[in-house]
Structures are given as C-alpha cells and as structure tokens.
Length: 203
Image: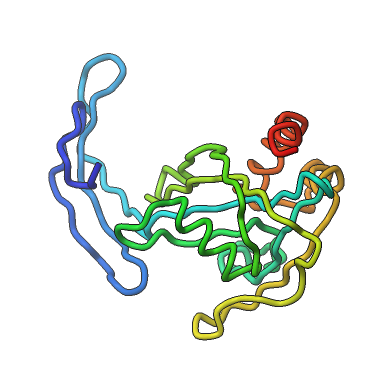
C-alpha cells in the first residue's frame, strides 16, 4: 500500500514532501474515523520515510551459536544512549529486491557469511507513530566456525564488528539489557522459543 492509496476511514487532505535526500520527510494533514464512528478534526503529522529493511539472525545449530554485529548508531547517540549497539545483520531492501535476497546479500557484506537455509520470523513496523520503515526478519542457518572480525562497505562508511556467542548467552543479554536494539531483541526471543525445533529441523 502506498502512502497516497485510499484507505477506508482515512481522509488525506494534504501530502507534502518537506525534505528529500538519502531519506525523506513528509507532512500529512488528515482526518480519520474514531471508534465511535465520528471523524476527528484535521490533524497534521510529519512522517519519516527511509525505505524498508530485511534482517537475519545468523544461527549455527551444530555449535548452538549466533553471530551478532556491533556498530555505531547516530540515532542512539542523539537519544543519549551508548551509540555502539549489538544487532543482527540487516540492510535496506533495494527497489524490486525480495527481502530474502536482501538478507542473504547483507549476510555476505556484513559478516562474510553464507546462509544455507532461511526461516521467516516476522514482519514488523518499528515506530508506526512517525516512521514508515518495516523490517522483514529471518533466522538464517550459517556455519559460525570462522565468523568474526571487522566488516562493512567502506564506500558506505560502515565499521562493523562481527562476533559469535553461545545462543544461551545471547538470549540472556536481552534480559540484562545488553541487547537493546528492537529487531535483535525480537530475533533472540524468537530463538529462545524455537531453538529446539530449529536444531531438530536443521540437524
């Protein structure tokens, strides 16, 4: 669905692009139906458009390990957080590209990892109040034996540290708060629920 497609219960009165560069900022003036059937007064909202993403948790069922990445995030810095976050491999889906293709490509670019099987986890929208970005999340089977080191596309100023950790320890990092990136949290909690089934499937 595009931002200007007609939606039942929504009356878009104006849609203006305020800024366009690598990302885009749009402003909407709209009304929407209330739960009681009446309509709201016109409201104005700025919406950040940054494309859609695919992410993949790299899991080795033989070693029972995951491969995670750590990199600098300007948004976390601006929010007053420690800006080097522990995450799963992820990237923006190119126009016309399937999310699965993005996940496999990013695993190569960010982790030098070959995915031999891919299982969908979920499709989420990260911050629906103001951002259009959605993320298709997968778990990918990978051999973590030789994974590690520094990676990333130099032309994109990426500086990515890849490391492996036992799955049990990584899942514990969610509870301790060491992992606080939303997509990584979802992926690791999914693994906690599905790990034994996944090991049996990929045995």
